[in-house]
Length: 153
Image 1 (cartoon, rainbow, N blue to C red):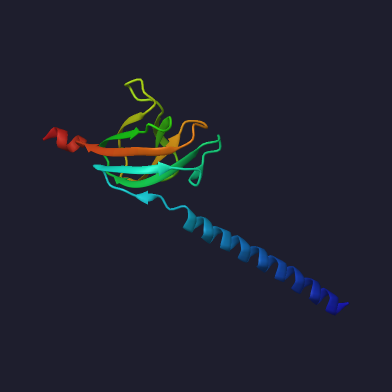
Image 2: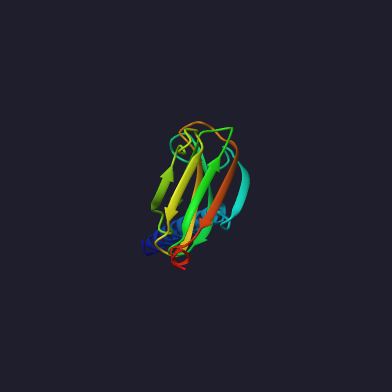
């Protein structure tokens, strides 16, 4: 009986070790899969949104870019595509959506977002297709306008 208990504990320990190893491997794979593309302001990005990008949960896909912004920065994020209805998000380091825009002020399906930055940190600019509108070629431009400190001078 004592040997059966030892075997039972060993079997349980082996199962738990296997599960933990599997979970660690999944975590490592997830960390290597999600790596937003690092960009800087005053940079124009021409890229393609495909079904290989991040699923949005509503049938569409999105692609993320990481940018460091400073407190007081005023930023314009312009997303243009002839291939799909664009949607752009600015997401804080904690995952909170700071701002978003679906259709720009010109009445088109392109997106234009103006944001004043309140905290210096790395932000995510998320390019997405509205709903299930698909994907395709797009141009993303992030322009750092004058900061609040520069406007005082």
